[in-house]
Amino acid sequence: MEAEIIYIGLAAVFGIFMAWGIGANDVANAMATSVGSKALTIKQAILVAAVFEFLGAVLAGGEVTSTIRKGIVDASLLSATPELLVYGMLASLLAAAIWLLVASKNGWPVSTTHSIVGAIVGFAAVGIGIDAVQWGQVGTIVMSWVVSPLTAGFIAYLIYLSVQRLILTREDPLAQAKRYVPVYIFFAAFTITLVTILKGLSHVGLNISLTNSYLLAMAFAVTIALIGMVAIQRIKPDPKAEKKQHFYTVERVFAILMIVTACSMAFAHGSNDVANAIGPLAAVISVAQSGVVGAKSALPIWVLLIGGTGIVIGLATYGVHVIATVGKKITQLTPSRGFAAELAAATTIVIASGTGIPISTTHTLVGAVLGVGLARGIDAIDLRVVGRIFVSWVITIPAGAFLAIVFFYLFKTFLP
Amino acid sequence: MGNMLANIFGTSPVGPLEKHVNIAYRCTRELYGFFVSAIAGDWEAAAVSRNSITALENEADDLKKEIRLHLPKSLFMPVPREDLLELLLVQDKMANRAKDVSGIVFGRRMGIPPSIADELLEFVQRNIDAAKQARKSVRELDELFTSGFRGAEAALVESMLDVLDQIETETDERQAALRYSLFKVEKDHDPVDVIFLYQVIEMTGEIADMAERVGRRLELLLSH
Image 1 (cartoon, rainbow over the protein chains, first blue to last red):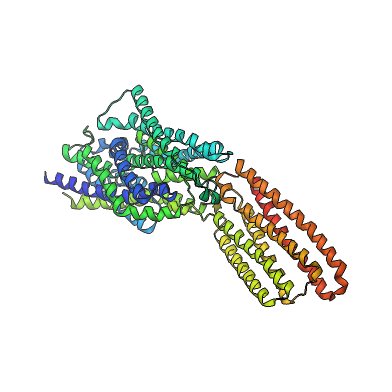
Image 2 (tube, rainbow over the protein chains, first blue to last red):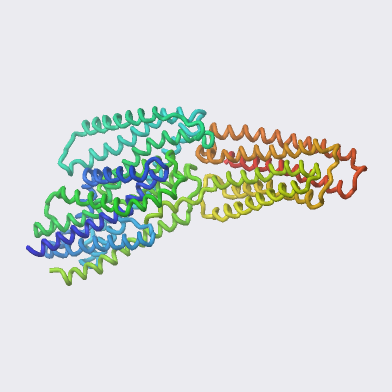
């Protein structure tokens, strides 16, 4: 009995540590695009992130959590020794959280998702046995790490191309922007809502029929688009600023759109990345409470709440500074460009969340930014940095794995 | 992880290029006051103008180096890096010419025949106009990048470049007329001074030539 309390207690502490790390760093990347483009102030960004990260985590974080919790390790091999799964999950959480901390201190671009998946695969393959890893599932996940930035890039490319064709190259871009931006708002709100309703809500006990899902998403998106339209109509041209920059007012119209995509981005991030913290936590709780591996217990809602809260605390305590620093440096990403990147990334991530695939939000966003760049949307992209990001992709997985293996043997030796 | 996304973005060359052309234009603009003083024989006032020309030329030079430093080959941009560097180079040459011209005139305390003074000043002014039009066109770079070098914005820049071409043609005509005016009175003046005066006219005319080359470079960017 006592051992179980220790297990759950440790898992909760490590889980919050990990969630804190995600909020402190990852979220900042997701929100900094909006701050950099001056669509949101830092305070507003924190507010948006807090609310929508939390909503995303709780409403749509279930599928990915379930993948992390039981999709990577083959539980059938552990029915005789359930405590090994507990040690492993604890070790993975601690390993990923520490790696994340070290990496962020040094400014290395790592992914929380890559480190936790690397950690789980590491402890399972070395600590238990090569067969303990569900390689088919892991293969799918790794494939998705390649596919998701490409998909986001492609979508971003198409979106930005449409922005150029429909608005920026026209005779009267302001009138065009006022006409088309509500359509983009509708599209953003519709996609995110629909995927959430279709894929996420069953975890919180809501089951809605397919037709009703579409109708609900449609109604929600139209409402948001109408609100956006009212806000856009209130924007009046500023002739003084226009003289310096002809697209000044047009960008302000896009800034309204970017508020919507920033919410989407925070929601998407919460839905995919909360799992990195609470997936292992949920696995530990399930084993500790039932004493068996793979018990068919549902994901307790308080676990999702812990993850969401941890992220928000990380954001408020440390993420603020990161947002401020990053936001200042990415002024190239004006709202017309930033929204395209955010919308493409958010769509890709939410779809992945719905399918239960853990992907890296940051890398997806990077892919989207490159997509805008390919559409001649960004003044200058430093390919060296992009190269470094790809390298850090590869390094993070063995690093997470190595740390997890070390902690696994430590826990195995010292824990009851 | 914090600054990784930020670092993907290289330093945009757009703002610095617009700043650079502004300095280069301001440098050429000083040339008018300089010639007014030189014609009046007021070399103290000319020295003041000459100093601001040199200072602005240095400033343009420093900024040029700075921009080059921040344009590594690893940058991925909507337009070729070489075209931007070439644009920078010709912008810088407008300032160089202003400095060279003022250097010769000031160094030799050059006397300018009163009969050509007005014509010379008009000619200088027209060259400055060309630099000004070049500045106006380059200042559209920001908007050009935003609109992907297409559509209404591109057409707007095209029309600005047409005006620049007209000004440059006009400076050519004025240059020819000015040389003829000098030719008519050259025998009344010191031959060495006259030879240098021809050179000064030639180099001043190059300011408009460089401005026109700025235009050519912008046009190349539009054609990508």
